[in-house]
Length: 139
Image 1 (cartoon, rainbow, N blue to C red):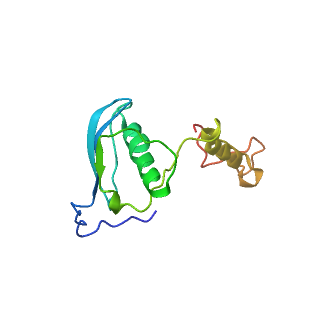
Image 2 (image 1 turned 90 degrees about the vertical axis):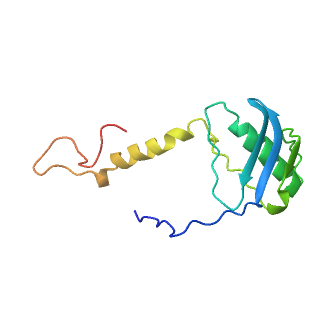
Image 3 (image 1 turned 90 degrees about the horizontal axis):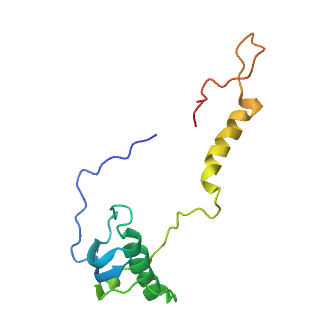
C-alpha cells in the first residue's frame, strides 16, 4: 500500500463558500441550523438516531436535487437557506444493499477462493487434508 503524503500547507477555507440551512425540523431535529463548508471534504457525525440522515439526505440533498435537477422530491422543511449559487452538482451515494444477502457476498467469495483446489497446498509427504498456510480459521 502506498501512503498518501500530507500537503505541506493546509488549503485555506473560503469562508463565503458555505451552504447554510436554517431551522431544519424533522425526526430528531429541533430547528437545527447548520453551515457546511464547500470545496472541502466534510463529514457529518453524531450519535445513532441524532438526525444526521434527516438533515443531510431528507433536507439538504432533496433540496439540492430539486433546485438543480427539478426533481419532484419534496425536501424536509427549513425556514431558510443560502449558498445554493456555489453548487452545480449533487450526488447521493446510497450504501444500502439492494439484496438482503449482499452483505454476505465478500465472505462467500473468501470461502470460494479458499476452497479452490488450484490454490490449495498440501504439506510435503502428506496424504491428509489440504491446507492453506495463509488461511485463517476465523472469517
